[in-house]
Image 1 (cartoon, one colour):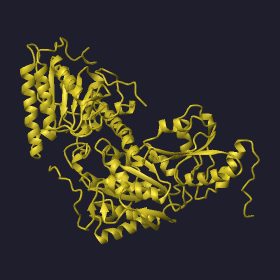
Image 2 (cartoon, chains in turn cyan, purple):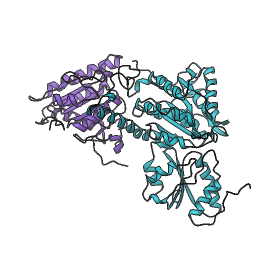
Image 3 (cartoon, rainbow over the protein chains, first blue to last red):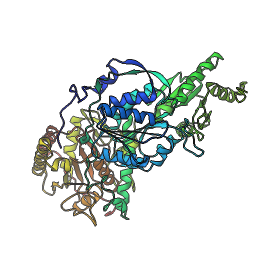
Image 4 (cartoon, chains in turn brown, cyan):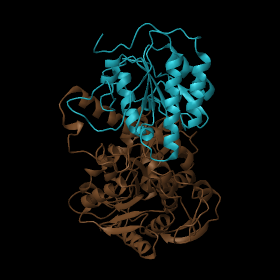
Length: 403
Length: 212
């Protein structure tokens, strides 16, 4: 095990300079570029010093996966291949990460669900794999349209879960994600989620860092578990594993192991706050009415606030950036003055509203909605309508629009 | 939010919580933590030395990162740990017994380890109970495995735990250094030497929920 010398300032085989991450993200010049979210993923990965990317097609992440294949052809990624299925991809990601590689993959919808068994395994094995989740419908009948229900299934896997609003978030957070998840006291996989199509397939102006600067490579020797030790857990899982023994010590060990995963999520708080400038963003939280949400529902909420202002209704905004770690204290503080808290979501169950209700005092303040799902858009007018109705103001239904 | 939880010798609970989930935070560079409270490193040297000198069976648990000569730095750390152990042996009083028990690897061992010769992260209490260890220091143990052990020890024994961590530290230990180096290990040895004879040893040994 060698202690690697600092590589900052040196160049990789593509001529990119390994750059101090803070300088790369905060001081390096940015170039405005008009890209789709998928193209932005490619550009972030180009700068991530990724060793391995493993792909499998499923809409709406297929385009990003294919574009990263181009990066491999250009020589920016150490290895790239297509797995046999989503389950295989996530297992192969684990193998690459066990071997000490910085790993990237993308997934969506039913593919994420099919691969689900791997995610608690990644977390338990302390593998800092980054997985982009371009959320879409998961249930039958099939929908490839935006729907964030799959995020709720990821919340208790032991992974870090972040929810990007825009393509700019996506670009910055892919790079920052590695910095947080590879910290030795964290060292957990990251599910970096966005609302499929809305972010992946629309074009936006994104400020990119220089293409000739990149993150320093991953140092597997800072891992909190031995790298690729076939004799010890977590790699050694099936030959005399303690989890298979029926005695108090085995149970206690496994319990302590699980606690350690969730402790690592807690430790990620400090690093996430450092790199994301807080776990939430807030605007006008002294208002009595607040919209608290994540993903593209934040953008719709922002527009709804503008429409409400035109009618003399003042409303604040809380953008939840990280779902794991959950910004409990931040949300409690931001909502302390609110009498009404609206949680617009792109899913049928309202999982975010449930999390918020479980976090704050007087949870009856939370109005879970409006909800859309199955690929429906969320016009800002329906958020306005929901708020006005709750406040007892006259509101027109949008149901007949277009008839 | 400042946590009221304190990381103290146990036996704490059937399943004690992870200190991080109770709001205990790791120290920043140049700091340490004592019982979950961030403290200057200077204070931690004094407290660690005091705990070692008070204990009836002060013990160092070196792990794979210093037991194997992975590189020059690991070998130098191993030499420093041996020096720390020798100083500890010199400084304890009659009735006290300094020990050095390795954690050579993390393999599950069945039916059980030999607690006379090693400690295992999956059932560290066996070694603590068998040797009546009432103060121990982890050094050179991978962070995940160290945290695994530290929680189990806190749950089932009254052993005081110290972590000399090469990374970010351990909130599950009662006292933790971070960024451990040869210099820090030597400095702890020097502090023990300096405090020799000034600390009254405890008479009782580690209690456990099993033996009490």
